[in-house]
Length: 287
Image 1 (tube, rainbow, N blue to C red):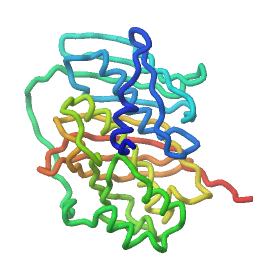
Image 2: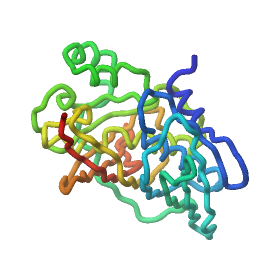
Image 3: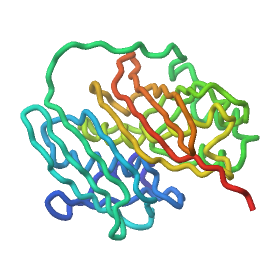
Image 4: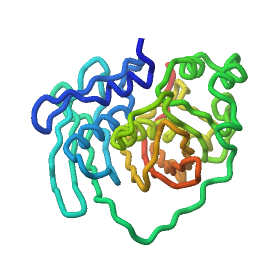
């Protein structure tokens, strides 16, 4: 049986149907809706098939409809522009004849110029934090069943939260979180694969940051959460099969929406990518 990360790589290896047209299949993880990160990652993979000589530097995406994991997704790539320095692509994800997701992506020819970055937050490194196996043994015995199921199933991305309280307590916390993450197995050297896998991983935990200040969790049965849009910028080369620190914060939540930001650093402290996401957060009455 293939590992979770091998299954993820298979899902990103899209089937070409025609020029600019690709088909992807969903990871079968038991969810009723497709994980948003999967669609982002597959859209990045589809666009990369049409840009062989440049690296992605930004993407801006909108989730239009829930996706059905039991049906394949067709990705249509529009080659908007091939310029001297920048290449622009638009990707439309279609399922059952309807658009479920749209993305604009920009690719940049490598060049040099002025450079600076903010410092990486001063937090414990991944080797100083408990592994997922240790977290399960330490915290999950008394955790709710849906939390245990989430942390027990095989996943392609390993996560080591700096602070685990949010998952086992309703204590209101500052709307910030720091999570080390990496692929659970080695990846090919192709930078476009690492970009697609990081795009997949970037949707993990980000919207959840909106709930910290309220002592709530994505596992609460009376909450309905869904990503509305997602944007990323890729600043420097990286490998997602080595640890990256995902530093996240939620400046504001209101009007049924949560707004979240994230920055990703490699272990040397280099800022390699940034992400921003807004999502729906609705309370539903329990019958």
